[in-house]
Length: 407
Ligand SMILES: *Cc1c(COP(=O)(O)O)cnc(C)c1O
Image (cartoon, rainbow, N blue to C red; front, side, top):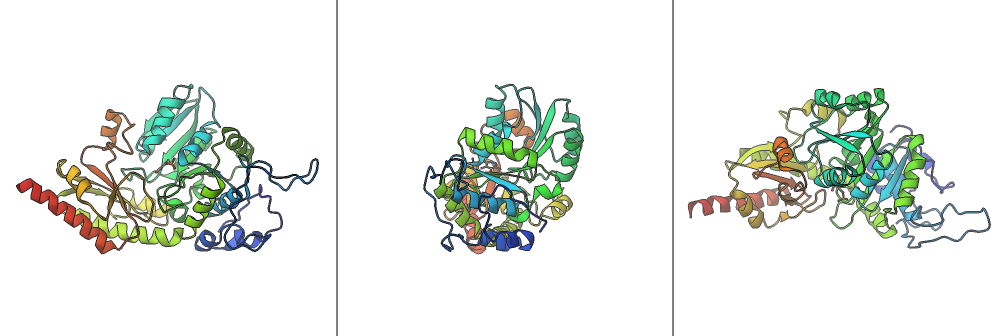
């Protein structure tokens, strides 16, 4: 691991020093930033359910004052995220959207951002419907095509915001080339790294300035907690981001910080199992007579397979696919029983989503069409159940489609 600095820690006397330098990601996920709680030896990070902290005297501080700005449970999680993303600093928010909304405050009305067109629908809604109103402008671009990114650059462009792989079409964007382009222009590259998690991809190592996570997904991993993160390595950005977090008040609660820490302990095991299951299911889907194209970045014939291998250590647990017949969609969503028809992704439970009416309903029809999000597209977030059971569940649901067709 590269040298990591987490210089905002109030834990001056912990033994983090020896952790940061050379432990592998698998160890950091389990042991966090501090290995154990230094004051009592507690192995599980205590939940500091306190809104405020006593000062020993005037101009004296324990490092903590008021939990909107700083809380010890949240700090341990923030330090852990910084280590996992190999950044200098992490900031935890009450949701992924809270983190994304925070990042926008680094910019000013009149600024222009280039954004992946095929991205989380909530991000589209936030940018277009809210920040659009406050004088920001956005260009929605297929960022997997670098020429289009170059063409979208304007004098007032201050950032490129990408999701890679994209959601739901699994397009891969070249992190390093985007970073070089925007740096020559004096701006920042922001990467929403939710889909691969820090276990499989660390965009800061490829020149990204800011990494976003919806911690609700793989990091928490159990479909039970909302959280969000910003991780960065830029000392210039640390102070403004802390101010934004404290001022907006969308900081993560101590209990949800603890749940996220607990989830992260098994991130490595979960990511490996999700990917193993996803690969098997993707291969199976591809052979199914009622299935059209299958989108999985782990296929060797995926158009950006080589790029994926160069910037990520794995392909993750997400698959999208077209069914051949749109009338199969309602039957499948009703007939799957192990796989649950529910929004979200990245948990231990396998979920199936219909992006057209769920995650991507906020995106205008022409943009959805251009991106390929139509009435035949389904998205699977593959969990850690037994792979054979998941395939059997899909096989049963597809068999039902065949039956209803005949009757
Ligand atoms: C879910 C998600 C978000 C939003 O995160 P919340 O925690 O739901 O607010 C942002 N980006 C991506 C890629 C997501 O999947």
